[in-house]
Length: 261
Ligand SMILES: NC(=O)c1ccc[n+]([C@@H]2O[C@H](COP(=O)([O-])OP(=O)(O)OC[C@H]3O[C@@H](n4cnc5c(N)ncnc54)[C@H](OP(=O)(O)O)[C@@H]3O)[C@@H](O)[C@H]2O)c1
Image (cartoon, rainbow, N blue to C red):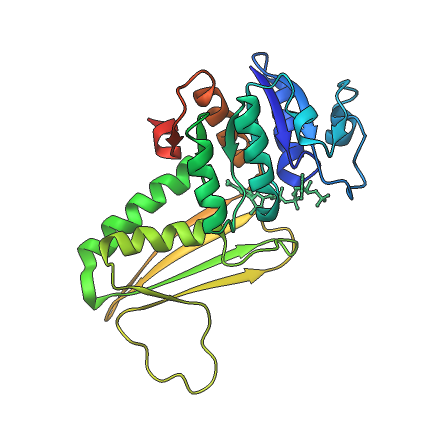
């Protein structure tokens, strides 16, 4: 399978490049970064630390996608729509893990899925997929007597908050209790907690790859459901599994649950 990487010089892009290079069934044919990037025009293998690959990064999406079956995107929400338009035109399947996307990007994902297979997921780990299922089940079983709150911790360079995974877990809680209302801070004379509020807090610092905890606070007990990512390769591997799944599939919007079967 021939692979292009969008956001090729980023933390995730480089992890994808390293793992794809080591996989006998994958060939990296393109890498795209912004024109401001210090890594633009450089060899992807050199950037990822495994030696010369013979493929250099480019800011030009059309040439970066040339010959690719699938593009894997871990970039910036503002850049995704531009990628999708070219991927649809050049018939390249899309795996996207970029978070903090708005309704315009969500609609563009749907539109692109009319031309090529598309899978977007805010977290590409099996553990988080299972955590979301457990959260829904726990919130449903414990019911109204339990207060739901969510914390997420990420490295100091993360630019969006709350994390896409925290939003995903909030959605899982709301599947069981649709009245839950997300808030993102408490400060000053806010009064006692109401039943329907659900705070989602982001902590930032150091090199934390991603921790998420969903709390269910009851009277006399509390349940904490936690996922901790200790290696970025976890998400990169998930994206490669998704890319292999999408290659050759009919045009459609797929979920990570589809990928995991
Ligand atoms: N779904 C998951 O499992 C998962 C896991 C981890 C991270 N993420 C998400 O993936 C995204 C990237 O994370 P990261 O940690 O890899 O961030 P990062 O290190 O900041 O990398 C982002 C990359 O995207 C590039 N980029 C920005 N604008 C671009 C454009 N217009 N065209 C092409 N490339 C562009 C950046 O290049 P410049 O430096 O030139 O701007 C950089 O190479 C974030 O949204 C993050 O939340 C998702």
